[in-house]
Image (cartoon, rainbow, N blue to C red):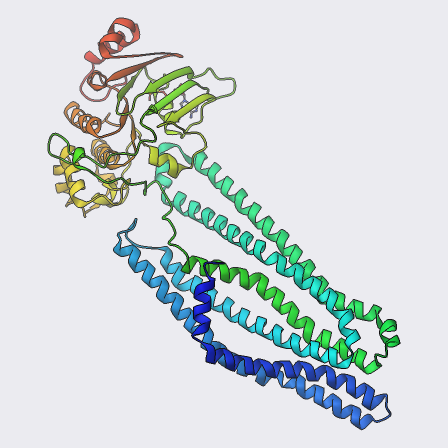
Length: 596
Ligand SMILES: Nc1ncnc2c1ncn2[C@@H]1O[C@H](COP(=O)(O)OP(=O)(O)OP(=O)(O)O)[C@@H](O)[C@H]1O
């Protein structure tokens, strides 16, 4: 509100001529309001009750002319109104275009400002219509009220004593509700937008949600947003009820007070004509103007404030999303030994916090089911490369989903970069980690879109470098380059996995979780991909399906039923019979993917 006052003053200061002409037309409205009551009062007192019906009819004719003159007065007002509303609209459009251009020039996320379309069309129109409605009603109320109150005063001052207190009380109550109601309206609008935004983003990410199993979480988040929007709508409805009460007090109590006070007024010498004139002022002029004012100020006024705040206020932050995670700048230190620039250094929450920390984590899929993981403790240091191995069905994927935050533990605490993963929105989780599942997905779009999906602002050079690091050049060449369209069905499972791995490599998330994400690659491609991912700044947790993949890691976690052992390859060969069994099995396994 305070932010809008200076531009509003400047806007009005430049339009003094229009304001003066509007005031003149409005004075005619005052005169009209004044004459209606006077005509009725005098027709009774000086005409019909005084035995002079002709004079009575004459005064009634005056009142009638005053009522009929409303049409040309309103026409004159509307003609002047355009002098205020159209410049307002032009100014808002100019402002919205300037800001959108500035945002595009600055290379904002996604390159285009989709909200600008809404600001240009819908919101500016709302602002213009609300402003027009407000000027009309506010001005009409002020001038009509002045005319009617002067009329009451001229009929008898005692009339004001009866009418003014309920009128002022209702008006005061109404004014008190304005500020909280505007705030409630703003919060309700924001909650609505958050819900709409969530729905749109969920729709766009259906594939991700299905691939990563985050559907239930997304659903819970949606339910929270619905509850939030409903709560704000209820608050708004509460204020609307208070406003209705204010309208009742100001709109109906004066009539009631006048009726009740008739004996008292008669005792003070108020004539029957003056009483009828007073009722005419209330019913014909004052109360309709008041009703319109309250309705308009309460709805259009709050809407206008919110919309103006959006168009003129500070540039809104781009909403975070999975495809739009926080970005960090690349530095010289990110250049890999092979000369390729590694993706930007991921953001770590705190240098001392472990990259992954599990404290007594237990997970059972059913209430009476045996736990898949039982009181598991694990700490993975920032930058560490951990392999997870174990027999099929032992809980390796379950572990990655728990760390990714797409599955909630039955008991225990899971932290990534020092932050508890429970209860975070998908967009927040996406900024912390990337989970690459076994079945990589590629969407219909260009090759470049697929690679840069988790980092839309990746420069072309960075995409080329990543393609080279993963040996994806021949595939990209075959598909027709980064700008060529991909038909996912025409790619082999291995090619799809390579695309998903480059996508994860480019992501700025500090933690990569690979759940057998290289199972369709040949050993050489897998080694190349894992080397690239391990060189990338950040932490790597790989569910390994080959001995070579496990040996490449700094440490290996062996899941064995509800027990788990962690150590280096050499340590585990000594300590873990299961690990020895697995390595023996892997040694004898063919090159293509086998279950460990
Ligand atoms: N959504 C689920 N509902 C119920 N049980 C599940 C669910 N997901 C996994 N399980 C069960 O939990 C156990 C661990 O499964 P998980 O997929 O984590 O094992 P894994 O070690 O990754 O297996 P694999 O190597 O075969 O992929 C298995 O018995 C599996 O059947």
